[in-house]
Amino acid sequence: MWRLLRDRRLSTVKFRRQVPFKNYILDFVCFEKRLVIEIDGSQHAELQSDTRRDAALATEGFQIARYWNNDVLQQPAAVLEDILAKLSAR
Image (cartoon, rainbow, N blue to C red; front, side, top):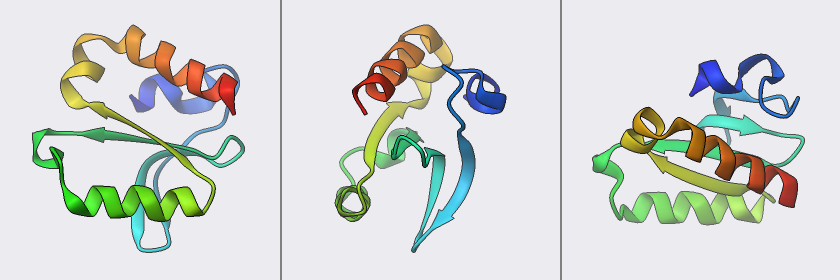
């Protein structure tokens, strides 16, 4: 995913990776658009801590987009289209 987002490759928007924010590490974040992208494995299926984390980030004005590892690996174009749609809406 980083290869696709780095160096303003996606719609000239700047993303950073593995960013500490409050008590969390954000997989990928665009501060300008207040969009956090999380890439999750099956260990994240319905975790209460993820729900609390998303709520805490939402109170800071972030939108959180979560994608499964398999989707990123097998359908990267679809994931990028979804990210672009989220960026356009912000």
